[in-house]
Length: 170
Image (cartoon, rainbow, N blue to C red):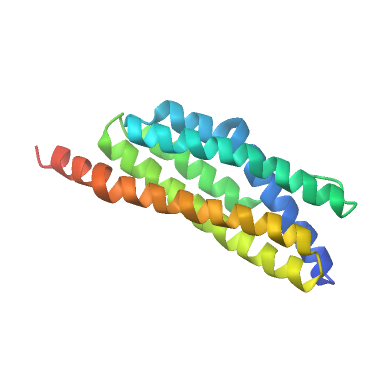
């Protein structure tokens, strides 16, 4: 829970910590697990590329913390923890197949939408607080998250969903 937040600055810092926690968890475990469990080479390649971007996003967040004189902390977030749990459920409850890949993509899209919302808010907060450099770095990450979401959607609609549907009807 947030607790009693008294300023936009405080809200910005909390959300920045949430974003940092999310990206760190994605780099350390989330994306590597999804890459390992994905059956499709196209999905694995897309996730691998986004893992590289996510590593850069962690560095960008650390730059923002440093430039603002803040300590980079992870602040665990129940929303992200639930999304991580959904990925684990997909992996453990669906055998390796196009269906599992379709589920992993759906889980990935959910995470990307959460990140798009988070970074969109952070960009707006940074601008309002006069943090132009932070806003530019956050905007770069926001664009990467939008692109990752679009790539996952394209893989789903072009490959995984049709394959999963065909496998089901057999």
